[in-house]
Image (tube, rainbow, N blue to C red; front, side):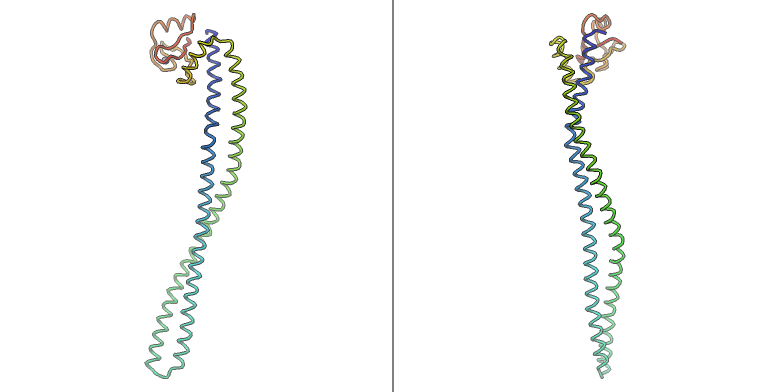
Length: 233
Ligand SMILES: [Zn+2]
């Protein structure tokens, strides 16, 4: 293999590393936003679970009050019925008592339904609490990991850049600028193998001259289709 191609392969490897680490750093704000979104979602879930319990309790208190008012009325009607001497009035008060008692029965059924809902609501609340606690615990770890990744990548990028600069200083500047133009388009496939007359970068057949020159290894060759640097395998 031509020494220039060997160097370009190393250069490509370094550049690819830098690119990967930079894109990892770029992704960090999106990952952080996703974590925040999970936290917001779990907080909203907990808030609605709490609200549902309060509303259920309020409904029960209101029914309790309505029932108490009707029971008081029944007691008063019972006293009136006991005191009356008239048969028709006695019967009318009796009918009124029955009407109020029916209302009390309906309210008791309703209250029972609300009370039965309480258990399910408590269960939902405890699940929401657990979920939020989990999200918070994981969030601390995930945020720490993201920050560590950023710090590590930042240091590592500088190291690789220094390594790259060392490599580049011994190479022909026109070769480097050509390489950089191709790398901007082809990334990790800037230097590719020539395999059965096909370029490893674009998988197309290359012209005969390029094939023979690549195999002869007398000069640096580029694919006539995509421009990537070729080496014979
Ligand atoms: Zn090609």
